[in-house]
Length: 484
Ligand SMILES: [Cu+2]
Picture 1 (cartoon, rainbow, N blue to C red):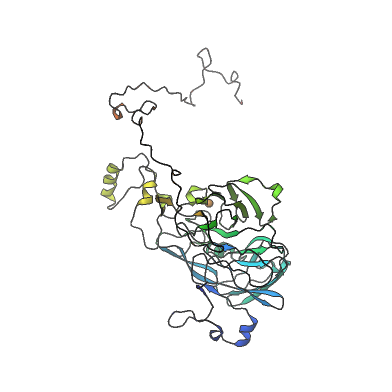
Picture 2: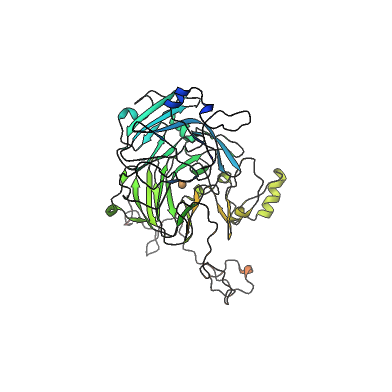
């Protein structure tokens, strides 16, 4: 974990200095655990436990796990709520709020039965709190500003202490100026591993949060009063092609866990496999109660974990099935031009708007391979390239890469899948194409010599009365379907 640095003063060189020397006051250093910070937006290696009970650590998609220290039987963590600069994908940065240098904050991992003490320092310009979504805990540790505790003022540090009573899938987020703080990216994952290391164990366990921002093309700061019309649909504050792949070994038992802190639902769909939901933020699902799925909807404020055995090698798409959530900003106000002869149209519009370029008269696909001039700090609406060409995606899209012979703990992108010969869809080049049987073309000129039969139209004008067998209009009384 080379990117992990100890929090310290930023010197005149701009480097983050390491170690205790940079922290003023030895007593303070001993009493408060250090708060590591992360500079990278790429997926960091899982934090394998070196003491305490054994567990399979999670891999946080484009994120990292918060180191802790043990002190007198307590597992101590330190979160710092602060403004952060987050790369959403190469080519676009956003000025967000988060924890310990990133949005989302680092994943907290601990074990059922652990006593955790979490220090929260507020370096935001306004109050905050942290709510531990899904956890059983004393009411006063629940983090609802005003209701269960005073808000944490800027500059102050509060302490949360509770015992982890249930293993499972949780998250944390503010309960103080919630709409603004979540729209700015404040959230993190919280995994509690079972005390029994064998319980529902998997070989690879991925976690991420679904979040959304409304950032105008060319700008850096999310609009925090947006209610529904967000334009950047993220997994862990990243959009495709900035979302790392889920790299798994052939025949690995795999778990993918996610929580939804956007303002709409997301049907997450994975290609190539069926899977079963194994866990929610409410707890483990009894295997006898689970049913097979290939998409699982995650409502606002919910969490889902699904398990599968990765026995089909390949590059399998995984994405939100709302197709406008696999697109980046820019595109949503583009008019539909499908079927419009754009040559003429472009000429006419260019007269009043010089430089005008119409988009998508054959669909939008042509934009996937296009290099368009964009405002600074703006991602293309649909982009990304793979071995067969443009992927034409954005937003909530990634790839599950299933490969034979991966070393344990190797999460590096293995590149494109080498499809065995004869297993890729191919172009038909045989006989019979020009005479392919089709319905009569509507436009006789399109096929010289074609005979066009007059089309038979069966559309009825609903404003005209229905006629009975005698050819006279059916009266309301005679009409058996009438409601009157
Ligand atoms: Cu979605």
